[in-house]
Image (cartoon, rainbow, N blue to C red; front, top):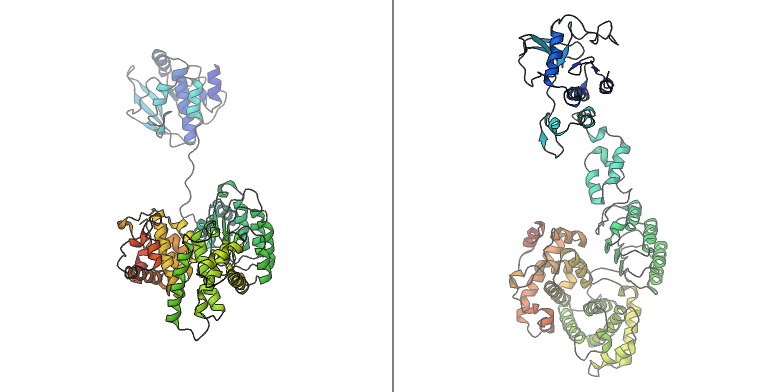
Length: 618
């Protein structure tokens, strides 16, 4: 036989010496077998170049005596092998007269494969019957261009033997369908844990863990997340999850992360050690890190101190709420530290002296704060104040120091002005990183009191403030939280000026004693987006309301909504107080004249509850 016939025999088909016919020696099984048969048929018809007349001649020679077996038919004595005969007569298949839709006269089913049927048809040559093998119609396939094509389209496009074999003979078996009713509980726990480790973020892993009982017991904190989220507070990370976060921070996708909040996660010194290894890396770009309300001890604080000595990028570190840290460890951490550390936080309290009248104290405090705001922005202010990094930050530090000092010491109202000047000196030193000499500053501030106090008195009172407040000097203010919240919710220069105006109004009002700095800052962020109609643009950001509530850890019904309503009423009352310096200050063009805006009609807390629950970009 020819090399082509030998190649066809290797595919479990016996090819006769006459290339116009082919014998069904073994019934093909499955889609691969049918594809092989079609390839063999096409090889005989096209690649061997057999013409139609030659095929007719070969067929007629066999039809002369249909009952006599040929020497190459299966079952004949001279055949190479004698498998069970498929038909009682020679079952030669003519390729020349094969019709895609033949008219059937009689059917004989093969014993080995009932899907292949041997059919007879009255041929056009001599009126004789000729046996023909019918194959099931092939499934539609796609051509080389990705478009659905008919089974014969490939033959028109290709003529090479190798291309035919590559198109049909190596067609893979169709994959079996998955069993219906397959459940996650049927998978091995090891496979489920691998799937859990592939989930990119902790938020997605928590969702996957809550799917069913089989996933509830998986370790979602084990593997480092591909994407570290900025807000990971109250996620029950524990030390295992923090170690995974520390590893993820050292990878390139998370290298540009600017802020990370890990508060309320039960972190101990084990997790702090892993974070310190990341902090000491030279490519670490994190600027704000919050570890508040965890279980860190003195050992963890000393590890942080050592790591931060090598880090020059971190700007803010939150450590308040870790009750097991001693004052000695806190003081050691503050020495020669480049970043700002917040060790204390809480509500502004009224003075503990029971003889102080609340209304009278609030009035004196408002006058003092308004004068300090004017002093900080006066053209006669000393040069040292102009060199501070953030004047607004220094102003709110001064407010915070005054409230803390007045609560700690029983002082006469005649000394309030001196206390305000001394707290300004201390705030300026901290704002400048402790490198500010207070001699020149004390002289300049004493001159603003019109000779009431001397520079020496200012310096002495500033020393008393430092000694009395000590670690309370390092606590965040409403302005600290406002900057953090606006990074999450979006801001413009106009909306930022309006938000600062609102928190400055609240700092001088009794609202400061009723709500936390976080609630005041969050309410200002909400109210600053309510004046678009008056020319205060905002930056649209998806889901900014849920982001605000998530990063502030505030209760909507008890804190944010009533505080926002109170601040709205406070803003509306300022139209009757044009002589207040803060109103004049925010009339300046560089502050976008936000104090001249017409206050919106005050809304009830229920309005803000519904507004903040409907999360959108508006």
